[in-house]
View 1: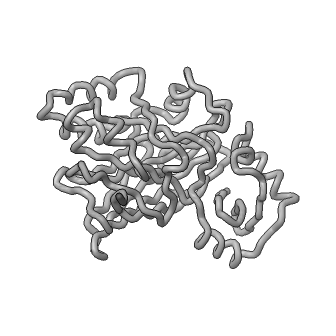
View 2: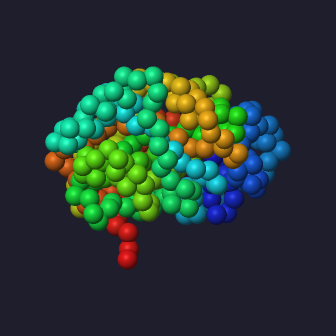
View 3: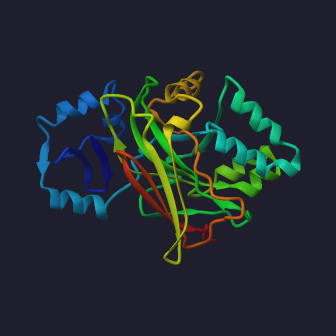
Length: 283
């Protein structure tokens, strides 16, 4: 199932059918078993035709986030560890990334409040005080109040590599700023865990020309999704649930940095595509 949040109501797509759900978003998704709950709703919910449903999704789509915080995990793939070590080599801090990659405890950090999250076809920002900025395509989990993974989405964890590379203690500034996170286009809800063969793809266009294209699979992640969720909820309560970006393995080469106007497309099998346009915070 695919659940879309729009300004015209919540739209659930189950196979070829569309349903309009007017439930409060936070209450709707924060169920003990979201798949079963939505399956039951389909028996009585208002059905809508494909054309108006598609029009609503295309023109009134919102990020699939209500009042939930967004958190992120880092250095969960070998390629991410290597990238972090490369960017911090000159500062002598590279060893900390090797240590956290091997450690039992993962790197977890706060990413965004909901009002700063961009959606599909919306702008995400690069910092004006950073010379090296990249998108990070990540499978994103929706975890309910009980700490159980209920749905999946696509995340863009924007990162200022020059700032984090200068000093790991600058991570909050490298990762947390206005419109530094995007999630969308929907929540993907299944009755079983997502396959480790799921592909994550990203391409970047500049002036209509593709300047980057790469892909990976979840099988390359060192840690399990339930492991990351468990560490996040170990000493934290999230009354409306929480979103967790799970790290990236698709990293542009070191000589690449984003520019205003670039278009970033992130696709994950079974979920769809999240598209964002690169901008800068307006004064």
